[in-house]
Image (spheres, rainbow, N blue to C red):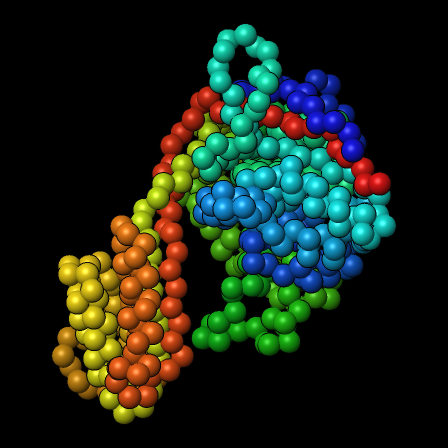
Length: 471
C-alpha cells in the first residue's frame, strides 16, 4: 500500500480550473442510492439495464448520520457506513467490468477506513481497482502556509457541506474506480463528474446551475421514477403493484452544453413524467429563486419539464440566481440534547382506547413513584386515533369506540439516561401489570443528538492521498 500524502489544502474559495479538458460530449450518471436505507439490488439492476452509465452515485448520508457515526467511532465502532461491504460486494464486479465509476459519501466520519474496507472487499473478489478519498479536514491557521504535522478529520463530529471541487480534483489526479467522500452536498456528488468530463469551469455558472438541477433531481433515487408517488385515490398516481415492484432508479444524460434528460431504464416499471419531476424539484427547497449549494445558488423558477417518451424527460430552465456564488458553507455541529426513551403497545377490540389510556396513566404513575416530576417529560399518543395531533377527541366516547385497532406510543426526552431506561422498564411491566389484551411491546433508549447549524468561511478542505490498488 502506498504511503498517504496530503497534496493540497485550500479554503472555501475555489480556484478556476486550468485549461479544463472536455473528455466527453455527453456523460451518463445514475443514482444507485437516495438514502442509507436504499436497496443495493436496485442499483445492480440499474447497472445491468443501462450499459452506458459512466458513473453511479450512492448517496447514503443523512444530516444526522455523521453525528451517529462519530458516536459509533468513539465507542470503538465504524466511523463509516457499515453497509459498504454489502454494496461493494454486489456492485464492484459489474461496475469495474463496465468501467463505471462509483462515487459515494458512505465514508461518513472515517472515509480513509472505508477505503480500506473497499480494497479488502475487492481483494476477496479478485478485483484490481483504485480507490480515492475526498474529505474535510480542519487545520490551525498558523499563517505559514505549510502543512501541519497532523490534520484533524471532522473534529468532534462537526461537518461541513462540501461542494464538487474536491471530487473533481480526485477524478483529475487518480481516475479512480471508486471515490469515497465524507459530507458533500447531495447535488455536488452528481455535479462533480459533469464538471470533470464535460470540461466545465467554476465560473460557468449557467452550466453549473443546470448540472445542479440534474443532481437535485437524481439525489433521492426512485422518488423521481415513481417511488413515494403511488396513491390509489389519484388516478394519475394509481400505479399497479407489478409496476411499483419494478421501479427503475433514475439516471441522466448531460451534454457539454448543459442539456439534461433524466431517464429510467427502458421497459421498467414506475413512472417518469412532469408530476414526478415537479415533486422532486420542490423537495427540500426553501426558496425556489435561490436554492443554495456550495457550488452555485440556483434559480429554479423557470425550470420546465418536457416528456420525450415514457422513460425520458428533458429538463431546462435552471439559472444562476441574482447572487450566484455562496461565500459561506453550511456547517453542522452535533450537540447532546439528552436521552430518549420510548415504548409502544397494541390494543385491539372492544374499548381498546380506554385500555390504552389506562396503560398510559399506569406508566406515568410508576414513573412518578421512581422519579417524581419526570413524567412531565413524556409525550403520549395513540396511533390510529390521535397520533397526527390534528384534532382533539376530548372525552367523546363515540370517537373512541370507532377505533378497534390502536397502538399506544410514549416518548420521553430526559437529561439523565437512568430516567429514559426507567420509562422502558415501566412500559415493559404492562405485560403483567396493565390492562387486558395488550401485546407487541417494543421499547428503546438512545442518546439524542441535535444539529446546530452555522455558516463558515474558514473551513479547510483536503484531497487526501493517492488512490491505492488492491494486491
